[in-house]
Length: 150
Image (tube, rainbow, N blue to C red; front, side, top):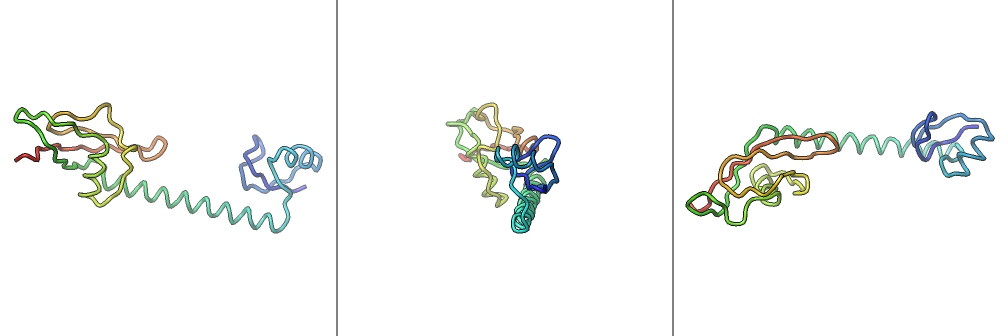
């Protein structure tokens, strides 16, 4: 019996795979538990279409991540902030301000939640920042905080 997996099944396959199983196993376990559906010609076409869409979406997302990484990796982003004469910032610079500076200077929109900081920067100068792209994919860049009072 041929079935299309709806969810990943250990030692059998991942969602969207068309597999051949014993008819009792297919009907009584896989289909009954909602792990698979019977492989009709329409269902196979639909599964293949769905799989192609997922692969295209994943490919587009990887391209976007690579573009972000190449645009920011080892770059310096200038951020202007109000400070006193000793170089201490009024309020500090956080992910939101850094994301706005990237948007303004590089024309790239970044979600501030992707910018990982231990704490807001409270002093002028150069600081290293990590941008969480996806999963384990990260990139580092520097932020040059300068006074806007000058």
